[in-house]
Amino acid sequence: MIRESIVITTDLKKKPHVVPMGITFNKKKLFISPFVPSKTYLNLKENPYAVINFTDDVNIFVDALLGKKNFNIQSTKKIKSFYLKNALSYIEVKVIKFIENKIRPRFECKILKETSIDSFKGFNRAQLSVIEAAILVSRIDLLPMKKIKKEINYLKIAIDKTAGKNEKIAWKKLIKKLNDKNA
Ligand SMILES: Cc1cc2nc3c(=O)[nH]c(=O)nc-3n(C[C@H](O)[C@H](O)[C@H](O)COP(=O)(O)O)c2cc1C
Image (cartoon, rainbow, N blue to C red; front, top):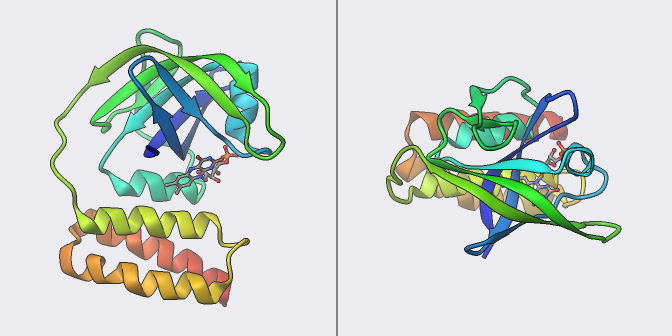
Protein backbone atom coordinates (compact mmCIF):
# COMPACT_ATOMS: atom_id res chain seq x y z
CA MET A 1 0.00 0.00 0.00
CA ILE A 2 1.24 3.46 -0.85
CA ARG A 3 0.78 6.12 1.83
CA GLU A 4 1.01 9.82 0.99
CA SER A 5 3.43 11.50 3.34
CA ILE A 6 5.64 14.54 3.69
CA VAL A 7 9.28 13.48 3.40
CA ILE A 8 11.98 15.66 4.93
CA THR A 9 15.55 15.06 3.81
CA THR A 10 18.64 17.15 4.53
CA ASP A 11 21.86 17.87 2.69
CA LEU A 12 25.24 17.71 4.46
CA LYS A 13 24.78 21.32 5.63
CA LYS A 14 21.58 20.19 7.41
CA LYS A 15 19.36 22.26 5.10
CA PRO A 16 15.90 20.65 5.13
CA HIS A 17 13.99 19.78 1.96
CA VAL A 18 10.24 19.18 2.42
CA VAL A 19 8.22 17.31 -0.25
CA PRO A 20 5.06 15.25 -0.62
CA MET A 21 5.96 11.68 -1.46
CA GLY A 22 4.25 8.30 -1.61
CA ILE A 23 6.02 5.76 0.60
CA THR A 24 5.48 2.09 1.46
CA PHE A 25 6.35 0.35 4.70
CA ASN A 26 5.92 -2.67 6.91
CA LYS A 27 6.91 -3.20 10.56
CA LYS A 28 10.66 -2.88 9.98
CA LYS A 29 11.34 -1.45 6.54
CA LEU A 30 10.22 1.61 4.63
CA PHE A 31 10.72 2.48 0.96
CA ILE A 32 11.11 5.97 -0.54
CA SER A 33 10.95 6.24 -4.34
CA PRO A 34 11.99 9.67 -5.63
CA PHE A 35 12.19 10.27 -9.36
CA VAL A 36 15.54 11.07 -10.97
CA PRO A 37 16.44 13.90 -11.06
CA SER A 38 15.13 15.32 -7.80
CA LYS A 39 16.53 17.08 -4.75
CA THR A 40 15.17 14.31 -2.50
CA TYR A 41 17.15 11.75 -4.50
CA LEU A 42 20.34 13.82 -4.27
CA ASN A 43 19.90 14.42 -0.53
CA LEU A 44 19.36 10.72 0.22
CA LYS A 45 22.50 9.85 -1.74
CA GLU A 46 24.49 12.49 0.17
CA ASN A 47 22.98 12.03 3.63
CA PRO A 48 21.10 8.74 4.05
CA TYR A 49 18.50 9.82 6.60
CA ALA A 50 14.89 10.99 6.30
CA VAL A 51 11.83 11.83 8.34
CA ILE A 52 8.45 10.63 7.08
CA ASN A 53 5.63 12.84 8.35
CA PHE A 54 1.94 11.95 8.38
CA THR A 55 -0.35 14.94 8.48
CA ASP A 56 -3.97 15.82 7.71
CA ASP A 57 -2.94 19.42 6.92
CA VAL A 58 -3.34 19.31 3.15
CA ASN A 59 -1.89 22.81 2.78
CA ILE A 60 1.53 21.34 3.59
CA PHE A 61 1.19 18.98 0.60
CA VAL A 62 0.15 21.86 -1.64
CA ASP A 63 2.67 24.41 -0.35
CA ALA A 64 5.58 21.97 -0.60
CA LEU A 65 4.53 20.96 -4.10
CA LEU A 66 4.29 24.61 -5.17
CA GLY A 67 7.78 25.34 -3.91
CA LYS A 68 7.31 26.94 -0.49
CA LYS A 69 10.56 26.70 1.47
CA ASN A 70 9.76 27.59 5.08
CA PHE A 71 7.72 25.18 7.16
CA ASN A 72 7.06 24.93 10.86
CA ILE A 73 9.66 22.26 11.69
CA GLN A 74 11.51 21.09 14.79
CA SER A 75 14.65 19.03 15.40
CA THR A 76 14.29 15.27 15.66
CA LYS A 77 15.89 13.35 18.53
CA LYS A 78 17.17 10.11 16.99
CA ILE A 79 18.68 11.51 13.78
CA LYS A 80 19.96 14.99 12.89
CA SER A 81 16.92 16.11 10.95
CA PHE A 82 13.51 17.74 11.34
CA TYR A 83 9.82 16.88 11.71
CA LEU A 84 6.72 18.91 10.92
CA LYS A 85 5.31 20.52 14.03
CA ASN A 86 1.74 19.74 13.03
CA ALA A 87 2.34 16.15 11.93
CA LEU A 88 0.07 13.58 13.56
CA SER A 89 3.05 11.23 13.67
CA TYR A 90 6.47 10.83 12.12
CA ILE A 91 9.08 8.14 11.47
CA GLU A 92 12.86 8.64 11.53
CA VAL A 93 14.63 6.35 9.05
CA LYS A 94 18.10 5.48 7.78
CA VAL A 95 18.75 4.30 4.23
CA ILE A 96 20.24 0.79 4.28
CA LYS A 97 19.99 -0.17 0.62
CA PHE A 98 19.83 1.60 -2.73
CA ILE A 99 17.82 -0.19 -5.40
CA GLU A 100 18.96 1.31 -8.68
CA ASN A 101 16.56 2.34 -11.44
CA LYS A 102 17.17 5.01 -14.07
CA ILE A 103 13.73 6.62 -13.66
CA ARG A 104 12.59 5.82 -10.15
CA PRO A 105 15.15 4.19 -7.84
CA ARG A 106 14.11 2.95 -4.41
CA PHE A 107 15.75 3.67 -1.08
CA GLU A 108 15.17 0.85 1.39
CA CYS A 109 15.20 2.30 4.89
CA LYS A 110 15.41 0.97 8.41
CA ILE A 111 12.84 2.39 10.82
CA LEU A 112 14.76 3.90 13.74
CA LYS A 113 12.02 5.64 15.72
CA GLU A 114 8.28 6.29 15.45
CA THR A 115 6.71 9.23 17.26
CA SER A 116 3.01 9.92 17.73
CA ILE A 117 1.92 13.52 18.39
CA ASP A 118 -1.82 13.60 17.85
CA SER A 119 -4.68 11.25 16.99
CA PHE A 120 -6.14 10.53 13.55
CA LYS A 121 -9.45 12.39 13.23
CA GLY A 122 -11.07 10.32 10.48
CA PHE A 123 -11.23 10.59 6.71
CA ASN A 124 -12.39 13.76 5.04
CA ARG A 125 -13.33 13.51 1.36
CA ALA A 126 -12.18 17.04 0.56
CA GLN A 127 -8.70 16.24 1.89
CA LEU A 128 -8.56 13.24 -0.42
CA SER A 129 -9.65 15.47 -3.32
CA VAL A 130 -6.86 17.94 -2.54
CA ILE A 131 -4.27 15.12 -2.51
CA GLU A 132 -5.58 13.77 -5.83
CA ALA A 133 -5.58 17.26 -7.36
CA ALA A 134 -2.03 17.82 -6.06
CA ILE A 135 -0.94 14.65 -7.88
CA LEU A 136 -2.52 16.02 -11.08
CA VAL A 137 -0.71 19.34 -10.61
CA SER A 138 2.59 17.51 -10.04
CA ARG A 139 2.04 15.95 -13.51
CA ILE A 140 0.91 19.16 -15.19
CA ASP A 141 3.61 18.88 -17.87
CA LEU A 142 2.95 15.19 -18.53
CA LEU A 143 -0.84 14.87 -18.67
CA PRO A 144 -3.22 16.39 -21.25
CA MET A 145 -5.00 19.47 -19.82
CA LYS A 146 -8.35 18.01 -20.94
CA LYS A 147 -7.87 14.97 -18.68
CA ILE A 148 -6.72 17.14 -15.77
CA LYS A 149 -9.79 19.41 -16.08
CA LYS A 150 -12.20 16.47 -16.25
CA GLU A 151 -10.73 14.94 -13.10
CA ILE A 152 -10.65 18.29 -11.29
CA ASN A 153 -14.37 18.76 -12.01
CA TYR A 154 -15.10 15.42 -10.38
CA LEU A 155 -12.83 16.02 -7.39
CA LYS A 156 -14.53 19.40 -6.79
CA ILE A 157 -17.76 17.64 -5.78
CA ALA A 158 -16.19 16.52 -2.48
CA ILE A 159 -14.65 19.97 -1.99
CA ASP A 160 -18.06 21.64 -2.34
CA LYS A 161 -19.75 19.14 -0.04
CA THR A 162 -17.20 18.43 2.69
CA ALA A 163 -14.31 20.94 2.78
CA GLY A 164 -13.32 22.96 5.83
CA LYS A 165 -11.52 26.31 5.59
CA ASN A 166 -8.05 24.74 5.29
CA GLU A 167 -9.08 22.43 2.44
CA LYS A 168 -10.74 25.33 0.55
CA ILE A 169 -7.51 27.36 0.79
CA ALA A 170 -5.42 24.40 -0.45
CA TRP A 171 -7.85 23.75 -3.30
CA LYS A 172 -7.73 27.41 -4.45
CA LYS A 173 -3.93 27.34 -4.65
CA LEU A 174 -4.02 24.26 -6.90
CA ILE A 175 -6.72 25.75 -9.16
CA LYS A 176 -4.68 28.96 -9.46
CA LYS A 177 -1.64 26.92 -10.50
CA LEU A 178 -3.70 25.14 -13.17
CA ASN A 179 -5.25 28.39 -14.42
CA ASP A 180 -1.82 30.08 -14.61
CA LYS A 181 -0.54 27.16 -16.68
CA ASN A 182 -3.61 27.33 -18.91
CA ALA A 183 -3.49 31.13 -19.43
C1 LIG B 1 0.68 13.35 -3.03
C2 LIG B 1 1.97 13.40 -3.80
C3 LIG B 1 2.80 12.29 -3.84
C4 LIG B 1 4.01 12.33 -4.54
N1 LIG B 1 4.83 11.23 -4.55
C5 LIG B 1 6.03 11.29 -5.17
C6 LIG B 1 6.92 10.16 -5.14
O1 LIG B 1 6.63 9.11 -4.56
N2 LIG B 1 8.13 10.31 -5.76
C7 LIG B 1 8.48 11.48 -6.39
O2 LIG B 1 9.58 11.58 -6.93
N3 LIG B 1 7.65 12.54 -6.45
C8 LIG B 1 6.44 12.48 -5.85
N4 LIG B 1 5.59 13.55 -5.89
C9 LIG B 1 6.03 14.78 -6.57
C10 LIG B 1 7.03 15.51 -5.68
O3 LIG B 1 6.48 15.90 -4.45
C11 LIG B 1 7.57 16.77 -6.36
O4 LIG B 1 7.79 16.55 -7.71
C12 LIG B 1 8.84 17.21 -5.71
O5 LIG B 1 9.17 18.42 -6.22
C13 LIG B 1 9.99 16.21 -5.81
O6 LIG B 1 11.13 16.77 -6.34
P1 LIG B 1 12.29 17.40 -5.41
O7 LIG B 1 12.74 16.37 -4.42
O8 LIG B 1 13.34 17.78 -6.41
O9 LIG B 1 11.68 18.61 -4.76
C14 LIG B 1 4.37 13.51 -5.23
C15 LIG B 1 3.52 14.63 -5.19
C16 LIG B 1 2.33 14.58 -4.50
C17 LIG B 1 1.45 15.79 -4.46
